[in-house]
Image (cartoon, rainbow, N blue to C red):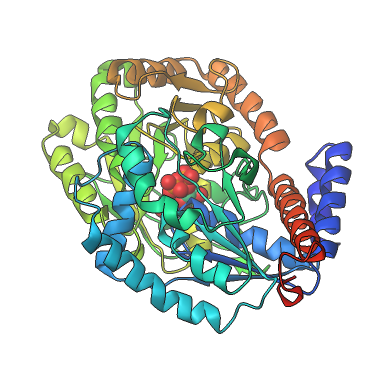
Length: 482
Ligand code: UDP
């Protein structure tokens, strides 16, 4: 079966036909060109999660798609993390963004641009992701590539001064891109010609180890093998397929900070899966859970994220984890026994994905209490699995959940009382939680599967190729750049 046809069992027929047609049309227009996806990490975050299968499908449809990961220094990632926070409207570490930071940023990207120059041919497409790679746009343009910059970050307040600071740093590079993609219209960079800005909703893959169906026995087996639930705790029998199709077993254990043993399989779990980033507000989740008191019933809280050392472009991880563990130690002992802070093994991406898959499926309630959010793929993943979600009404989460219909939104992300009340409400009312979960699944199925985003990319990149050809015909551009 052709890769794209796999979606036929999930999508409505008309959508399947429309998306497939768009992808094939795009692949035809892109023939003879390489599509270079450039990001700063091959794992451990939403960009990597999304691009890996999309690159595979694009190839399956006949496009020559490839993926490059840039190299950076700790000083570079400190600057790009600052930019990341600023574009979210958050001051981050409050550090400067002056000439010295520009020098660090441009210095690292100049080395990466040199590597790009050996690979990219005129007329290729260079698809850059997030602030880490934006500075490659001028170099890619000089190589006469079609340059697209994709931002996965957003800020709910268009006049935010922190975001404006971040944009001042980045806009000179972004200006070199032929097109800019954002996840929501409100996330468009200020001052960029609206005709060059395209809104593209992110998506997930229903067939990967992260999201593929898992049978009822496999879920607790995976969690026990990973040390997250009580059980035999041995490597599992195959629990699904790796993304390359071979059988997948889970044998590595999470590094869990807890008091006492893992929870028994029957205990309800409130789960947040996130990178160790302050904007994911792990501290707030824990404090909100503590506030629930008896209303939490017999539920435990699991805060899970990638093993700290594994994500090179996320330098705040250790400090976020330290602060979280200090707060955990300060909890009364009866609460420490109910809160599990889990660093998930990252050596094997499919194994990590299977653990996240099982955690999300096992959760009584999935939470995403972000203070800011680009889109929030963890919300999409949980909805796709039919789980009830309680999430802050920030960024793209607002596009995914309609409060009370297919999840619960907490208007003010800092309102711990409202958060605690929303989670307790669902724990106390499993029938309502199940109804929200069913509606969530249906919405994610219609709106958030990869074939739709692949079609969006195919249409946009195909149009950019046509524009380039038209520009050459009108002779403004040398023919070899077509
Ligand atoms: N994720 C993961 N393993 C972890 C923690 C997170 O695979 O230990 C994944 C998570 O399942 C999701 C992505 O990382 O696919 C996070 O994407 P999201 O859009 O929620 O947030 P971002 O990290 O991009 O800010």
